[in-house]
Image (cartoon, rainbow over all chains, first blue to last red; front, side):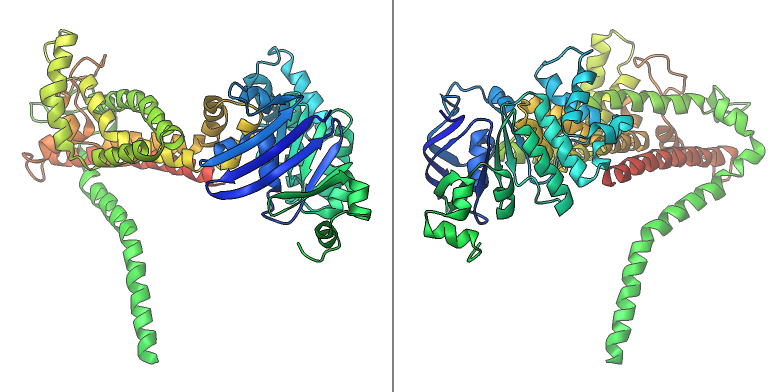
Length: 250
Length: 290
């Protein structure tokens, strides 16, 4: 059974229907890419998985999203627990205006996940798992805002890892980065894939082809096609998918 | 064509002059204060002025010790800041982060209204409502005390402090909030651990400007602090501030007398104090921009 399952998902911003009858199953410990042109609803879909859309006024959702078989939109669903379990990395790196250390320690503190003495060790482990530790070891207490864009994004990933999520949602995590930095993040994703279920939204088709195991193509709020990345990119089943990936529109 | 150029030139110069006016005024005021105040130190030593414990401007022999006045200003301001900072911060957080729609509008409106309330009205309320209350509660001989001044000043400076703090909190990028919520932080954890630290320089600037407002305020303190020029030991005794001294004595002073110059010297001290406070506030504002 899939880690995340969407069943007959409809999503509305006021009167505008942003998602139309989405059905998909995201496999555990794989990288799933969601591609499509701007405004197709891919970010909206992603933000349904950790209920970040709840922050927007005037939204309405119909259907179900199951994570580990539990509907996260149940009335008694624990939103904080959900967001701890389903981490998110944003388009623009957004470390807090705190020190590098405090950025990572934040999640541990708010969830009371570690004793005071253990925190420094966990912070180092998290930084190490995104290969940032060696670069910042001697300045853990300086502001995270002084890092380069790519370092900031890796810090944000480390910040997400700190609370031991099971799923990591990535919303165009490389669109603010240059190609070299993008490559580093992609390599990191490959390493993380062993332990985490990753869903990445990207409008960069090459990126989807490079990093993902499975790909969904969205257009105008519909999930047009979903399958193995290799299949989607070599023999798409739908004319619209083919047109998009061959660059006829998008 | 030429006429157009001349017109442009004149307009540009006029706007430039307008922009410079405020700087020129500040310089002129300071120059005037120096001109009228500095001669005082030729006849009265600076040491005795700053360190003297008694302000007896019309007794014989005269004494111009401003220590009680400076301490009076500081204790009233300090008390006001202790009240206004937590209160103002709570209000600013509520307006910026929690209140929505009508509540928010009404709150903002009423704070703006408080800003425009004449200080004499606030002083009047302090005089007839708060002072008797303080007298009764603490069983004092008079309610006109530093505490009374502090509370009224706190009310007066609330709009300044709240609006700058609220701007600082609102200016924190939304992505910080999203990031914190996405890790599973509660709204309050997000405010306390992420938004406030990010807004800290603006909040500090608000505190400094609040201090500046309190040090410079005259009418309220003149009306409610009792105006006894003694070195204050507690908030529960009458004090006299720098501003109240100038305001109450300038009207009856003999022009050109020692006392007259002494009041201008007081003005220099007051001007320097608020200048320094504003400079610090400015430092925090620019720190925030970077």
